[in-house]
Length: 232
Image: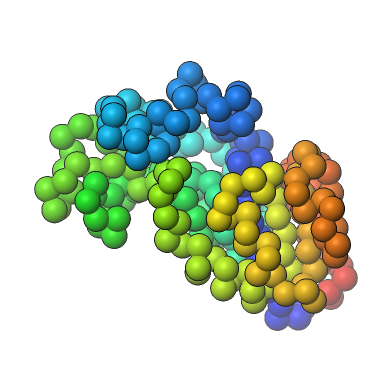
């Protein structure tokens, strides 16, 4: 099997098939929470206890979710290629499926960080964060999540990974959220490019892309089978 690199960009659609709801499923609401109140620095400043409660709930639900067929198929692809996963998701389903190289653009539910220093991060697993829980610098711990309006520190690393792809697969994202959506422009013209999503995301009209209008669980095994067979 050729020593080629497959880079995968995943969005909320792949996690939704493991039972994890998305904001877009319910018009910007998630379990009754307004996205602007719980996923922004303004929301944190206005009501940190509400934000902590929201992410504590998400952490609990993510821990109960299981990797699905698409997660497992991507992990199995490492048998044939060098595989890099770039995910917009904050759960650890890729890791639990067995993928060994995963870049989280928007942070991880399983980590907390200092309110003052984004580089002061601690692993909390499935534990809740409560008001009064302090980082080592004395600040309040907050979710280690990139909120709306905040910089995405991993975006340059992700862009470099995409630029080295021989195959680039986009799964379960409408490509409406930047800067993540801009990663597609770093892919070299000679790479095999695929998008798997049940909706009609922006790339559908791009030349050079193979578009599969299906769920991740339906589409990912098919695309992987095709790539493996064509590159034996």
